Length: 460
Ligand code: BES
Ligand code: MN
Ligand code: MN
Image 1: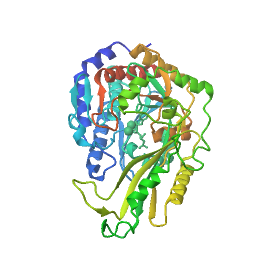
Image 2: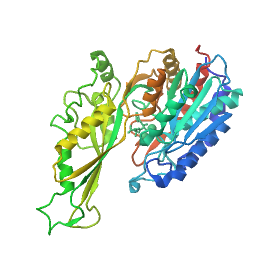
Image 3: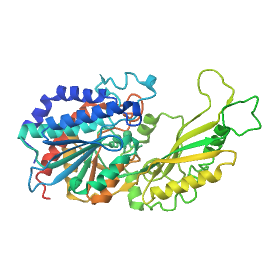
Image 4: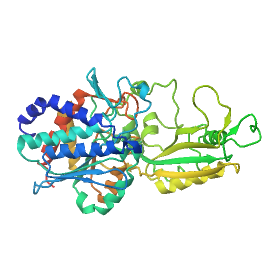
């Protein structure tokens, strides 16, 4: 088993080069949420496409969409071998609040064996592992050991809206025997993990409008509606004392998780202490009747993600804002239907609002939850590859985050989706000081190269 030993040596000899290239990628502020970063998004797409070409792909395309371009590469020169689709994203979350970064978000910096920068864990660092694993295989063996399609998108962090359309129009092109994704986390350091379930995500924005213009709160206050107060009252009503979302029908379609699965999830080597250290809150809350792991992985939630209006600058401004806005989202679990949940949320919010304000309710993106069996032989190969690298048997976990493409692929092609995450829960994804451990990254590169090699020996 395993490719020739030259491969490991080759990878080792490229360590500095790999790090230098990853830094190039990380320096591009490809923030998909903000239109001012459109040129950076395009630069990141071109960067990834260029690296796929140097990795040995003869077919590499940058595919425009309604929003951000997709990068697609394929090599189908291994007749009789399986075809693997690798998916990742080159876009990143906004870096704000900037002043909380120890070193600037887009100036990657190595400290204590970690590399810090936006996108290190989510997902440029992980995408880079795969590009370099494939490149190493190609350089050492002169060819790829399998048929491989690579899809790297630029809209993951804003809901992968353009991707669905692309998948529907390119079913033949994207067809593969399995999907491999590295955009998740390990349960803990040194615990190789394969994720078999993700929550879905619906994201909403609401704007309440009251007075036609901002008002002097002394001259008018007491006799006019304050949209910001009304918004705060609204959110106060959206959870009950057991931390359940108070949206009629919200839990109706939640599939019951078998007792045996709950038992297995709760028995994982997951440490509450590590979780609390990563969070750093003075206390913890969650839905009554469920363990923390269950709250995170198998229960739906409703969260307020942002709220604004009125004055929040220095000092005081006595104003009654004309408008108040909020961003909110629901995490969904099997078998909740995103469209149905969006309707329930909007209907209930409208019902709670007084006539003194008008409301604009927008659904910015929707995404289905995903959970799938892991009995396909490819999972055995993945377990072996992870074990050979980390020296430990992989665990099967569910996670609370969302990756819209996984559901799209699974629903469209019914293929096994292997989520091999190399991030760690405390690596500050979406937060200041995002980082990854360089040793884990290096290990992961070898593991992925080994896995791609082994898959070449698997029968279709
Ligand atoms: N990589 C994450 C998803 C993730 C993180 C899954 C950790 C499992 C463990 C991804 O980039 C992400 O952040 N997705 C968004 C969803 C998207 C629709 C905006 C999320 O989960 O908030
Ligand atoms: Mn990601
Ligand atoms: Mn993310």
